[in-house]
Image (cartoon, rainbow, N blue to C red; front, side, top):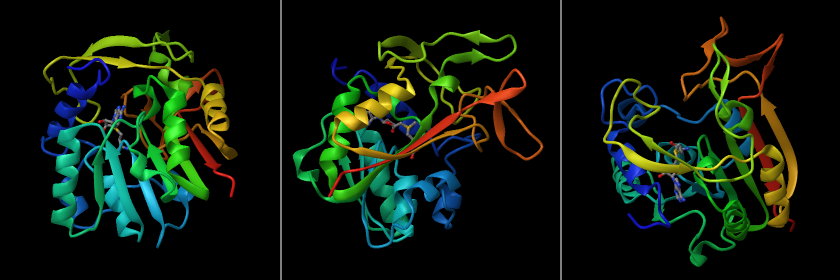
Length: 268
Ligand SMILES: C[S@@+](CC[C@H](N)C(=O)[O-])C[C@H]1O[C@@H](n2cnc3c(N)ncnc32)[C@H](O)[C@@H]1O
């Protein structure tokens, strides 16, 4: 495994398992092919109207969300560094009868042919924790935008990432700093209880301040930053679900945010 792609073997394996394994609670390919929208209300609202727009989806996995944007009328390009994910995404586009371009690339080194081509750059749910060079990632997102175009990022909030367990409360992860944290991973959030072949992985914690600063340093103007305490997913199976069906992270009498959402544009 080349050093510059430390997590690729893990994601190749997960891309093989997701949507093909019984008990997968996230990636239901059959219902997607039957027309189900996979995008959350939050990302739809943050991104807005996409019909007729050029949309770049970073870390697209095997393409269900990318293709959901295509169903809403966007001209879509998905990027992922996993050849297995990109191969499956191309196959899924064909099966769904949807036009889409999928590019195998590291999002810290986006190919120059993507420069200045997109009205929207979108990345959601499990993105920056895999990225060692946050500055390069933001620089690539800014490079891909047309002047006036927007980056939308919806991702796990660091307040959620730092917590290993709620009862008892165990905090095992820094709030930010970007230092590499290595571990061996032998499971996947999509299929609780399933053991996969153990893979070495490295993840990086970023604070909200570090993420916003990286966007500003890439030349982007941040126009919206949301921190969300009631959300419709809990990929780490950490939280309990309220009667309204939403997950919350209790903190004293209140709640900590589970997701953040950021919109930033490239000045025209
Ligand atoms: C949690 S998934 C993202 C989920 C995605 N939003 C979806 O539609 O299912 C993370 C993705 O990031 C990709 N990835 C991780 N590091 C990457 C990198 N440096 N460059 C490109 N893709 C990367 C993985 O292959 C995986 O598909």
